[in-house]
Image (cartoon, rainbow, N blue to C red; front, top):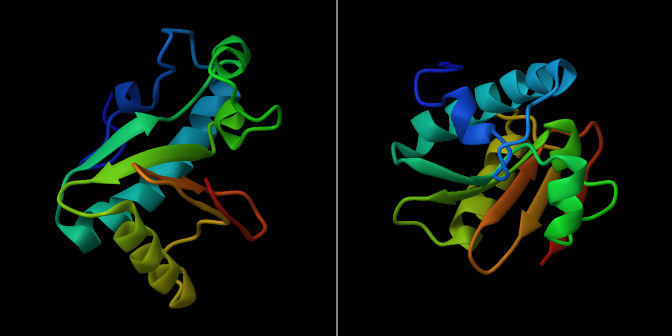
Length: 125
């Protein structure tokens, strides 16, 4: 199921095959719209490493107990040809000008975490 021009629901599905609850899907739709802005801005493919996580899968991988992934409001991404730090810096600039609405931004060595929580949160993994 296509959510935006460049993203489909399957990209956000839990990596263990768990069914995505309906309320989570509504959040995934909002998240996909924000990612579409990034996709168009970067003009590069974006790989989603992790989107929705079931409680069981989140626990299995050692995710935070209150992870935004459980709500379908978070994603871990890699942008083709870009370092995660470059992605994070660009996202911060887009947030400042109001082009995207990501509350959470985590900087990791191999990916960038983004989420649409209502408040600002920043961290290094």
